[in-house]
Image 1: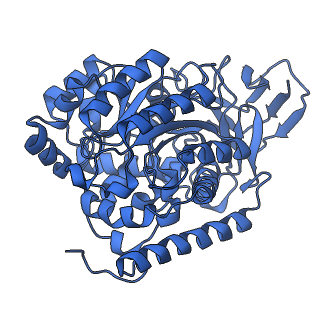
Image 2 (image 1 turned 60 degrees about the vertical axis):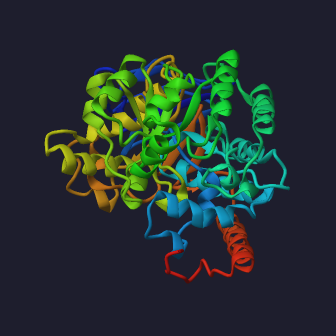
Image 3 (image 1 turned 135 degrees about the horizontal axis):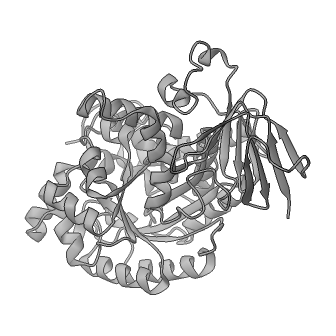
Length: 471
């Protein structure tokens, strides 16, 4: 079991209950666990010793919602200027050509981006399983996460209601309920760990009300609870979804999910923009979680999360980047800044400060994932999951008055200087450790080009150049 000593930091931003900032602090970890933190700790040596002079240490950011496979379909011209449903219909035709190696390649790039932005734990929602392609696609993401060293929370998604049955996606990217449930059991039994410092936990995640059957929702909830794992899905993201549920099911989206057992402290929803006041109270009463994805919500013009109402009601809110195709990036510090700016604009200048935004992406996200005992803050007994930035950067000159607020207020869009997960250095000097970044980028672009070319050949639409809206 290795040991880690970080010493002489400019400051350690703990994000504990008191939001303490330890000036000139040091941190010592045995294995994954922090055993000492403070200005004067009784440790002088370790297997890994990091002189953090000039560095500010932060708890690792936690991404509560992502679609890593979408890393290969960013900046598609035809999908840039439309709402969610049109955006999805455009991209389904590309995603249907995914192969296992594409999923792995996209995950390496997407998870690498997250690590380089200070993210140490990532939840992913994988739901697209093209007909005729291996059903073990989520395994490729888990393999990539292990190689990169990120703490990973894959959720086994599914789409089982295709266009022939009144759903949104083409049948070719859907599975049957039986196939989806059987493979969900396989993934849980093979990969899930309930250990405090697990590197992989698994969730159950049918995609959305408009592309899965009611039977799958009901059986997924029962399955998840029988294995004591968490439930995740998209909900209340757009008014189109709301209208679909009203027309097809006669109720609003949350009432439909509640009907099928999808309310509880083991449930978190992605987006949650269009919940009404009574629904927010219900979510808070049952301690449900919500993944807030501000950049994606702004790009798709979906709306603004009622953050303050949710927090007052007791809804647990965390931060997510959402899929790369609706964000076109995976930078968690940028996401924290977007949340900070968006809610100042929407709710008033004094509605949220930078520390609040940072808290959403750390403590809030840990709570959403049911993992607050181990991650989300730097404290004795928690994981040594953290990132560091060099305060001596030109971008921070004239701004070193509040270390907690610094990366959110100034908009630190570049890579962090170091990321550590479970006591192991995975980003050093802004570069991924043990990964050839240029080679990974080249493989990813080649895979993306092939996916778009195959979709173009099938549909006759040039996704690389066309800006025409589909009829």
